[in-house]
Amino acid sequence: MKAVILARVSSKEQEEGHSLDAQSSRLTEYAIKKQLDIIQIFSLTESSTRGGRKKFHEMIKFIKSQKEKIALICDKVDRLQRGFNEQPLLNTLLQQDKIEIHFMTEGQVITKDSNSATKLMWNMSIVMAQSYTDCISDNVKRSINHKIKNGEWIGKAPIGYLNERTPDNKSNIYPDPERAKIIQQLFKSYGQGGMSFKELKILADNMGLKSNTSTPRLLAVSKIYDIICNPFYYGEMKIKGILYKHKYQPIISRELWKRCEAIRNGYNKTHTAYSEKPFLYRGLIRCAYTGKICTSEIKKEKYTYITAYNKNGNRIYIPEDDITEQIAYILSKIQIPDEILEEITSYLKKSKQVEVNYHKSEIKRLRQRLDLNQVRTQKLIDLYIDKQISQDAYNLKFEDLKSEKLEIENTITMHSVSDSKFNDTLISIFEASAKAHEIFVKSSDLHQKRKLLKSVFRTLEIKDGSIGFSLHFPFNELAKIGIYPEWRP
Image 1 (cartoon, rainbow, N blue to C red):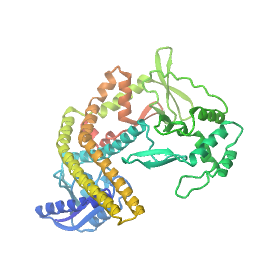
Image 2: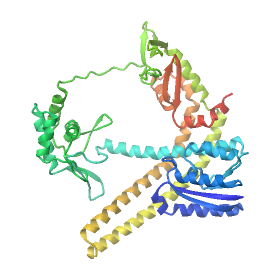
Image 3: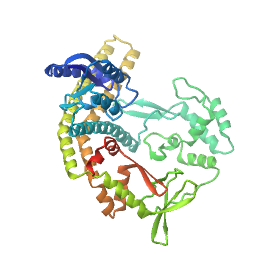
Image 4: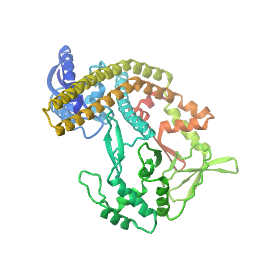
């Protein structure tokens, strides 16, 4: 049988790290052992989750052009796909007997006649690959959240500040000697009252305040407004509507900023704390007709109703017990029977060693790159000491090497964290889903039940008294591949 080899990495850095060559070599040996005739090797450097996957579709077009069945050989499932976007296309080719898919590491061969258990494991591998991608994303988010909680600003400094790298290669922000004084004067002038933002812009222009972009320009009125509204200048940074104290030197006092805020608003607002009532579905369900969040009300000091609207725009009241009964029924349908849960857990634990080996190999490769970075840095220093390169050339290259080192170290950290949490996270999700219905029906802990609903359901909505919903990953993907109907009669 003729064969096509697919070797894929997701970044230029991995390509330079010879991952493509290593994959191609292993897969070629596999094809020879299986007595498969290699007619083409596709080496792709592209993400499996972003963009249109142009090179992937070029490979599929080539396979379709062949007159006989092709063995598509991949290192692992996640080299072919990290989600279900390509599944309909691959399934069509399988059903047409145009391809059979070989996953070398997992030891799986998917054909037109593969049984349901083999296809289930293939689909589970895709779910795992998607989960791995999400884990990496979560690691980045955790890193960012950690920095925010430590008072570190993520990104370019506001006008009036400058970004820098400290001698120990950490990011820092400090007041711009020129622009900081102008920012102070703008706040002082506005804080005295009686000045519009247009007038403030003229003042900024006269003092020479320009943007901190590569091509500095005078600021628009809207940008002046943003400056006066930004709490960063007195010591707090606003991220997604929440204020965090930052660790950098303030340019103005908090009192001056508050005085400017009062002038902007035209009056002093007083905020009263909202005492939220302990309703189970508060903030979780929307009306399908209006898109508004459904509220809960207690009538006759005893019965709880959820308010929504019908297609005519009239308010309707649905007993909370009716909604609870519907959601309990939905949870019962996505409940995983013990025998299936045991099979999935066993598979995940066995496959974990594959992922551990992958992370170890990546960490080893990255450490080699880190060693090479250090060697290059030392050579650069020697060249500068021997006066073989100029100060400007040294500074430019040194900054490049520092940035590369930081990127490598961050990637090593991500692989180290994923190594210990990857499959454990999936197992805990599946175990939780097995008990979801029982927890929802029997638990008296309102917080636990709300947490469960948020974990399982991405959206909940009411339409004419009936619940509509969508699910979070991985429940949505498992529903797509039809596992739930097989589990429940």
